[in-house]
Length: 455
Image 1 (cartoon, rainbow, N blue to C red):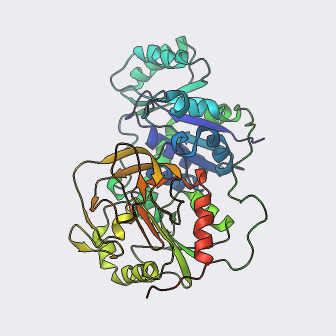
Image 2 (image 1 turned 90 degrees about the vertical axis):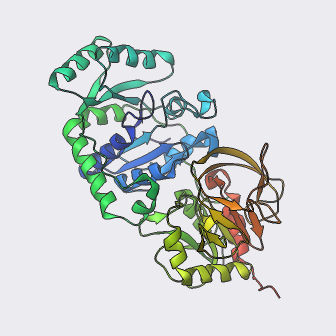
Image 3 (image 1 turned 180 degrees about the vertical axis):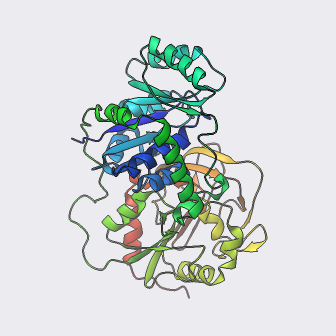
């Protein structure tokens, strides 16, 4: 049994201000001295990272497609264990699903799985009494959904607010707060910077979260919202655990370097937990600042949350590039996800990189984005050939060639992708390791084995 006061924050569609409100709520409640936890529905590691910054504990991704619907509640229970309040930020509109599977992958489906009340954020800048029809429709669409109330965003005036509150009172929907236009200003670092401001504990990111907390504290009835969260029933699931089945690992703990910074890593937080549980000593290495790998490094993991916009700084850090290349040359395991693949290439946009892979990266306009059900094309530290995994891709830069002599993945309708070379597995596909804990076990086993330099 897991007892965690909780709400799911959603909206009729994207663009209603859910992200800023989620951060503001966590920051405001943390400022009251509460232990708060945040999670993001879907694959967006940047949103999850900022939720972690606001809440003071790692933000989690609850993605039914990546981890399987059956793991969503256990992962939530694990990440929110002991919290006084947990907030789950939705994705897109309440009933939307990118893959057309709203019954299992929408925000509404996750809220039902978590037995959580939903608070709907509504941008009312161009809306009057029709807000009641809109909210009533969302409440009535799914009888299993628990719509606990709304927060109004971009209210024009006190008169406008009174009109909206009266209309919603007529349909019996509580209003937990009303924010005027510009009360949720764009105060966070540019989105293109990805997780870096969070991982580096950037002053602009910290100040932005604090300002959002102050705005929410002044406009939202936090006590009533806490009352709603505390009315959520017990979750009858066992929390997810990174611990492997059977006896815990013994003996030497190989050092695994995990790309990150003082505020955490560029991987899902479960990656570090799984590696430690599998017997590794995990040490953070900062690709932007550190000039050497941690002492005794036997393996390296570059998570999929690292953005593509730092090619110049990666290239300038020649000492670390040389150290990474040497680690790979000696056969040590290296897993590079997402933009980590670009770091291992020969060059990116004309700038020299680590040179581990005989490939050239180039940035392009537009994004390649979406889920892939992939089959391992080669035996590697990640998976044996023929194993299947679901991952997510989101990138603008591409590599030429797209795959090495030994590709990492195949999937229907696509050409082979990624590189397997000696102990290296590099791909722009990002799986969620909580669904595949065997990745950590294989990596730690490979790290603990004696590696021999090639002749």
